[in-house]
Length: 382
Ligand SMILES: *Cc1c(COP(=O)(O)O)cnc(C)c1O
Image (cartoon, rainbow, N blue to C red):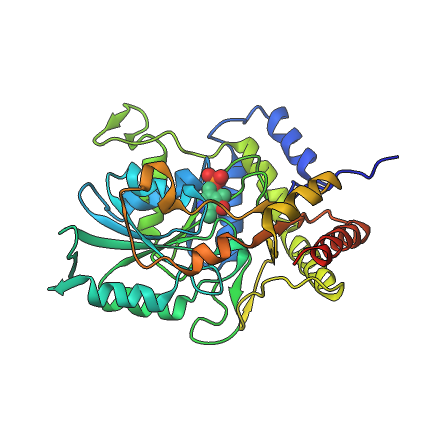
């Protein structure tokens, strides 16, 4: 008998999902109207302690709306990480702006020292406007990604952003539930520290709505603006008056039904993921740590392998799914001509990281089997 297949990160739908979705179908509220959408927005807003949230079709759509709501436009630039999923960067181009790629530090999130050095040495700052000396374009914002559920160094990044008048977009798509426990931002959740934050409920994220996203901000007007743009910028709901270009990005009641059921389980998912992370460590796997002074949601586990591709192949043969970290965005075809600033650590980590199974429905036996297979392989090489 062959071993069961262990996937990397899959949905866990053992709560009230079916009840709520059934209710949505029975009441025939399946589209972008219906009570669950507002309830889900309120649930997330309460959970991360912000006054308002806007539900949308995906994290990507949320990031696009965030760019538009901040007024980022053609001919401007936005600083982004190179070590991330491409959906953190594409919305910059959707808005007609250009990315400038930044390196990570050992937390895998944006290096605040390099960010500061870039602004200081590669740009001119005058009258509240930061201009890139290489391109001559204005730099308007920075997109910070809380990679794998870790928290970026928001204390330092907010300081640099404040110094140079940059807007801060938090791509918290992987980090719902991650929060500061200590320091200047104690009690604050990933996504609620910058000007605007976005969560994703794609199938592989810590909670899922099949596909979906949520925009949060401490600025209620900004959230309103995103919601307005997500519903075709409809000024008058009777006469259908539109004074600008909007989008069809609103979440459906069916997705929100799933989301509400998932929110009831979020803290349990985080507990399980944290326990499984600790169990891997206990069994002898050296996983990358999360930042001190935070409560991480432990979304993804990063193992540094001596032979990345060999390990992935070995695990695959053992019916265990694993993955290298994303190909660095500044090396991808659409972005090869964009500016990249002293990318070093991202390359180093790119060559070594293997993400190991981390689903919230992973059993202790699964964890043991994965750890054994990884250790077995690592012992045989180098
Ligand atoms: C998942 C993810 C997104 C996009 O979210 P979708 O809901 O899949 O559109 C954006 N950025 C990062 C870093 C992600 O992991």
